[in-house]
Amino acid sequence: MAQETLVDEASGRKCFVDFPDDLGADEEVTFLLNLHGGGSSGHWQREYFPAYDYADRYRLVVATPTAATREPTSHWAPEADDEYLQRLVAQVFDRFGPARIRSFWLVGHSQGGATSLRLLHTPFFASRVDGWLSLSGGRIGPPERAPGFGPPRTEEERARMEEVFARQRAMGPPKPPETDLSFIYATGEHEIVALPETSPWAERYGAGPRERRPDVVDAEAGKINDGRWGDRSTKSWGREARPGTAVVYVYPNARDGRVVADVVRLDKGHTEGLEPRITEELVALMASAPGGKARALAQGAPA
Picture (tube, one colour):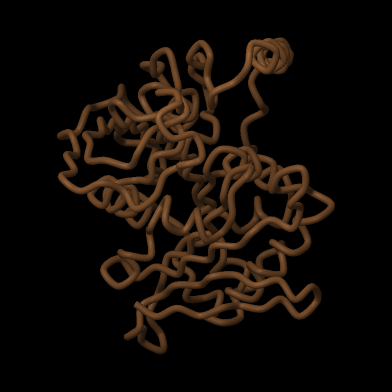
């Protein structure tokens, strides 16, 4: 694996980019734009979802940036980040060649997942993105949030957050993307009440009922966790990184070969870093999905 730091000339912002060190001049790649959650950073996200470990095996290019807004906590914001993320994507396309981008995936944890969905409603990303991996960042056809979800809070903080969650429920689920793409949702067991047995995204593509694949068992822990809370952290927020088992469901025979899948990491919450085998399983699912939007643009299709 090779690593570069891409520097945005307009802002001076830097971004991790990982890719195979033996990449051929005409070789195709799968491009992942890996977005951290609120309160996090590109460095943390790179270790939370360490797709770079599989860059050589699956011929990946993984770009992991950091949001510009840092106060009161880091988060992705349209006015601060959208143009930068567009320039970053253009840099990667120029660096590796748009005709070589076999597929382009948005990957987002938590607020990075919500940001991915928002970006998919913009023409720039809708015309380029072939898939979305939501890492505890919202599901098309959302499950019920676990009671008391979140880090340790005072009674006043819990009441305030419940008001926020109630307003979100009253607004209804977010509008799904209008563009065609594959969709994978992964969550910790303790973040939700239960995973829905059906998927409106799978129904959109005429996929069959979900099928459970063999569980993915990891003997190794993930690389990182949110250690700010120590022993006080909640199950829903996440505890120390540790080995685990993940349940994988796929919706077969989706039209045009689209990949639609749900993953539940058992006995995990929101912030335990992904273990190596489930990371590879998610990478393999993304690499198996169809692409082609970048190539179509390179050949003159309208953006």
